[in-house]
Image (tube, rainbow, N blue to C red):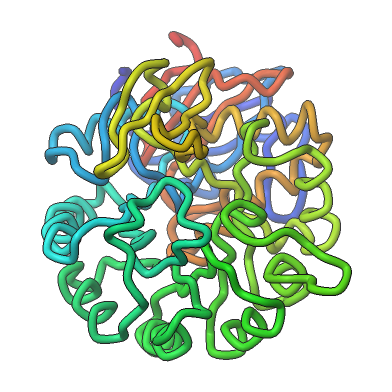
Length: 384
């Protein structure tokens, strides 16, 4: 890793801003921030032939680098964070999986310290308040109805760092839990759900604003029973998460979401587990054993997909080169939209002056070549 420069000009690249792409643009970094003008004697880095985009923001991630956010020690969690930073994710939320309530409150205490230190952007509780019909890689024995009192218990254990809860809102207590979360400024996400179209509309009206990995762990679209997917796609109040790893979604499903919801309502996520950035083998996801083969994670018992091994640089590359999504739309989905949802867009999510110097350098083929976080090169594009 290279050290922090007092003043650095990144020059000659295509720079993606909220207003559009600037050819032969420049980004000026001073200390930890992006600034409007360069100081005299500033170091210049020639990035001709490259792209500079905002650092990626992942709001749904269970681990990486062989380390688990759901059960790992502080050092292990930091290993996972570091792995994803090396793949361009400069802002990251740690997601849990279903467990006993006492265990989840203990995890909240561990992870909240890392949020307070600035290593994480918050905590996402995925489970235990989900449907046994759509449990995916969650232990059915530990599932429970979304009791508002227990939701509040986890919020309190997180000491103000809880950013999102995934709920099957059709279950008893679901709507009340959505209202509680909305009142406290915490995202209520609909996921791992067996809800009908009408039940999903009711949850959105109560304050739910995110679809947890749209399409996955929910009923498909039917022409007489459209189910949750149609309700989530059509409502302007909802942002839809998409896992663009080539396994979770067919490209046509990704295109449908972008076409129907629009880029301003898509958040590209990883839903990564320990194997992301690490490799094939046997892993644990909460209490469940997972086998990763050819980069695809599945439960040993039942063969359900168990999260992903995705990193966001790969999601970006696929979106632009395979799915042919415009670069500006991908940047919106992978940086700006999740930053807004998490309430941190004043600091990250774009390359506007005054924000943290969090950015990613990509070559002409959209392969990651550099990562900067708060003005410090994690991967220096001149060194690699």
